[in-house]
Image (cartoon, rainbow, N blue to C red; front, side, top):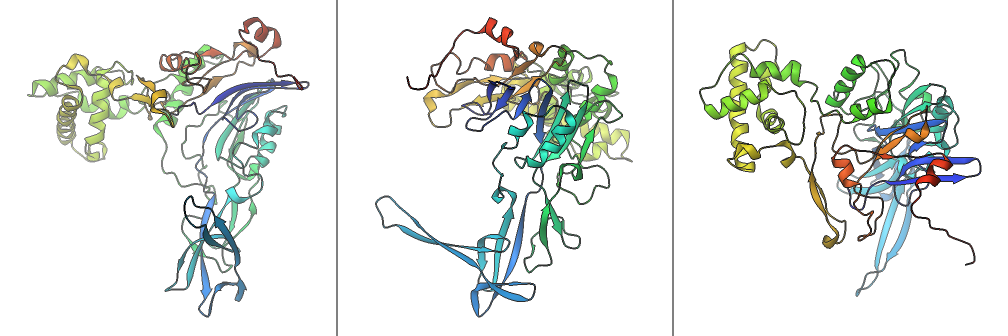
Length: 464
């Protein structure tokens, strides 16, 4: 969440060029959107794009480092930093073959250097999206991602011919050296190095998979056995699990309205199978705990902002002993662990939301705040929202879009808190209520549709 808004929505139109969607202020092009042939979206991958090298320094000359058995001279840059009211500060930077040095261990004659893709040409954020505006299909989209360096994103696309594709896109180092994947620092003496970068079709990717759909949710996207690993993120996310559940049950012909329902899905996916059995088949002698148990045993698993059960479940999951889900644990012990955690959850709810259970709800926990980056007088009031980081309706999704390839004028989007960054403008925070209440605004695309709905026009004329 950010105030001013993280995303800025644009429709760039020129002869032979028409692309609509969201970017970030000061970044050219459209990072998420469509061009009338191809639509694309993204979630973060987590690609490892930086490595630390331990440079062996010459004990007789600390300005030299070892490379393949020979000493070479480090590059030195002297800079002057003006300081208000004081003498200028003179600073010295050093660079090894692997990158800038950020720490020197003088006692052990070791310098630490970092090499990062952000220092490579073309590494500006979303700069590669400029090429995406001009592709005609998903195959061209995949190839264009060779120039998409940062940030690291799961780039997914669909086109007017019905193709779909995905690439774990980022400028990704091709690391050389035995069993080196970039997770830990390595000697900078030549045994480990970067040998160029992986191409899009060397990264995890898919084009028209047999299952008929593609989705990402910031989960570990590496196919089983993929080597070398490009990221270290751990296990499957709950949002990814829920997406798999929903696609397994969906009908064949989906509409934009169906995708609205999917994007607003607030079901915690593991509740029905993993958690619900821990609330059934027993009663508590504590009347407050028993009330909470009945709330959860009859709950649908949806993190709606008015739900007291969602709030209880959140606190219950935060404190329950993980043995409750481990194989071999007796049913009686599972239930006891559940009751103990529920007692703590009730106590937490009393402490944080008061004694009146009628006031208990998830939204009081899931309250989104919009402080202005610089000026407190421009803060936007907070809002209670449904969803959670563990549901598809993720509270962190500031911009979402649905592209209707059968009728681009039926496309829609949502962003927050507003399009204008000027406090006092009616468009400073007018998108926040839509975002909170799960509503979209039209992403009109054709010229007649745009002209019909135009309310304001700003013309910039050269020489006037």
